[in-house]
Length: 132
Image (cartoon, rainbow, N blue to C red):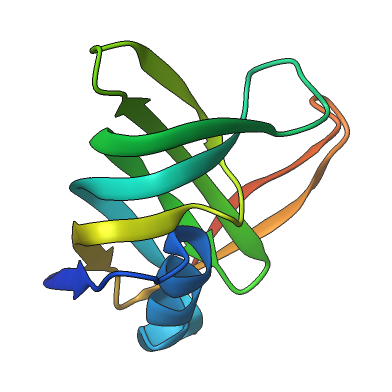
C-alpha cells in the first residue's frame, strides 16, 4: 500500500478531483482514508433518499472517506456550518472547495477495485479482486 497526501485548491469539485486522482493510481482506484477542508457548498445525498440536497456554505469538512474506482466513487462526508450544525451523506458532484481540501489517498497495488450491481442491495457495490 502507498499513501498519497493531496491538497485540492479553491474551485476544485471534490468528487471529480478524487475520481481523477484515483484514476492515476495503479489499477485506477484508491481509498480515501481521510479528508478535511472547506467548501463553498455541498451536494449530499442523505441515506434512503433518491435525490441530492444542497447544503449552503461556507462549510467545514469534518470528515471524508470512501472509495473511488474506474466504475464510480462511493464517498461519505460530514460537513458543518458556522453555527456548528452538521450534515452527512453521500458526496455528489457540486462540492466546490472554498480554501483547501486536504486528503490522504491509499493506493493498493496488487488489488483491483470496481463496482458491480449487487442483487441483494440493488446498488453498485464494491468489488475487490487481486490483480493477475
